Length: 286
Image (cartoon, rainbow, N blue to C red; front, side):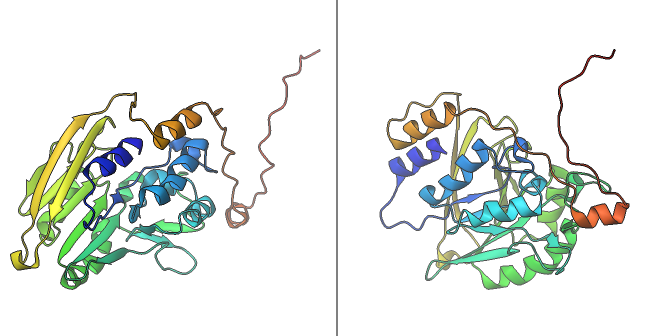
């Protein structure tokens, strides 16, 4: 995030319309059951970095419904998307399926999709009392064609593996750009399927990948595309407020997240009332 702030400062164009997005998995796995130091640092920094749209990835969903809601409440100026994450009680999407960013003569649609394969049936990683994940094909069929008719460019944020992603963009060639998360190799080397560009940070997590898209209504369904990559190290030498924030964050003690409690509805369903998880000193047997 510090590198991104520096990149924006160096390459910022005063009259440019920035659209800043994240494809998902921006909180750490240790954040389950509560937002850890790293999680808090990430989500509270989005406001300063003017992030517009954040997709919900598997690691965000792993945190559970209540923690997910609490996290989103801390980022008031950023919109969250996921077209196939559904609230059990209301049967409505937990967040917006997509958003449309209007730049006057040009409109960009941003939609997010989870990979249902990351949450196999019976998985304890999904808060099934509150959330369910629909097949991505079902959500894509429902939203992508209608969204494409409303916008000049369509961006998909996702963590779908390559074989599913290839099929999806061939089915919906109206998708202009796919941004994949750092959990996969999809897009680590920029690829093109039909007219759809696919980019991502790569599975290593240390590949800085910057993509610049240029839209012009006169080009109709075409867009300009430039990108470059740079390897990222573990160190950050950019001077300024972000270097100070990183130093302060790195000096913080690691937080230990609380375990996910079993929701009351699940307790009732199981016919159990599990005791709270506690630890006690071992006692020597006499």
